[in-house]
Length: 565
Image 1 (cartoon, rainbow, N blue to C red):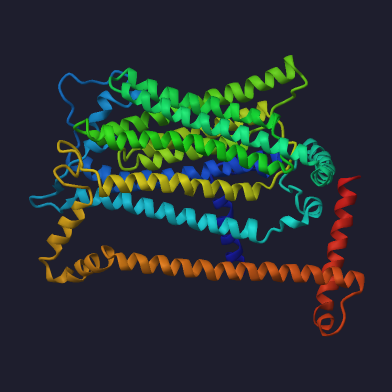
Image 2 (spheres, helix red, strand yellow):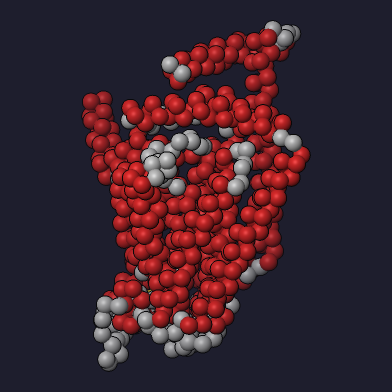
């Protein structure tokens, strides 16, 4: 039995490793470039799983029932596939199940077959997907924060760099030697930074604050100017060929302006390198989200009041943004990595081989996923485009990384950066997309001539009609009671919010208590090493503290001998 159990465990493990997507590529990237660059590919794979799940849910509960009962789309006479639809998403595609307008509002299967309510299926599929995505993001963000921030101590300084910053996933010999040299330089820089901060005169500090203020005002003004220009361009988004102008300009802004932001590091001198990365992230988030905010405002106000089937028009606009964003990401890899490598190695060798910009590339993924979340209501099959896009992007970035980039010279805290990326993906990306979809469902009137909710005051009115039908059946009175007294009750949501706040407060107190305990135990180690601990406290903790202190000293000596040899 033991042999059978061991064999079964081995087979299951081998099968899992074989079926795991991109396992070998992940190990190769992590072994040569470290966990910082690897975090980008893990993040891309994670978002790919979101879109695969979205496609399976939408295709299974919305598209397949529509194709079963209406297998042939209602294509008007004279409309045919011309090829331009691949870029514009309009024309032939606008009459298919690609968009909201291609779905029926009738209950399918009447006349002897089982009934399938397309209105309820469409509503609950979108709602369930958004709820599951939100729950997954909250769980991932909380788990990553607990492991990477609560259990980490930023006050260790050089000790953390010396003992805990080594990336054991690196296996390439050249990369190991380079990382040793980088760690040595980082220790010298961190010590010099502390001296510089302590000895910096008042005039220099005021000069730095003035530079920071100027760069932030300039970046914020550029974001507002780009948003304004996008709004005026929206007025020309009418005929099929001109529709490519708006996504072209938006994608061009998202490519060029972040590269301009990266030049600010030449004049900004942050004492902490992570602060420089955080500044770049915040500026890019403000830029991208302001543009998306302008577009959503235009879609909800102007498009919704102008076009007869406005949901499909919004879906087509999102389709074009996804396609154009993919094309510009490929251009960014060419100009930002390939040409930089050629210039740094052939023309201006002082520039050297470029590094892979993890922050900028991850923000591009977050922007792409935001478009997919917004389009889940307007284009149920948009995740198909995202899946193809992420698959190609994974291999494109992997080839560009291995051929054009070098391992990072500074080993940052990749785990904490990954937590920040998940937090940005949740807010403002997911919550912004959720607000857009929720506003559409609860406030905007659906189109009268297309879509599953035609003829209703709002999309949510389908739920009220369903409740009225259930109210006539005695067996479902409890469902109607829950809907009227719980779901539509403000007191219920107030109590839920209050309970959540109480739990947040309790877990915050637990976290602070654990951090205080860690601080006290660390102080006891110091007291034991200096012989200051005595009395009952020493009798209780002396054995544990001595063992921990010996392990700490042994790790310190071993790590120093390995790194500086």
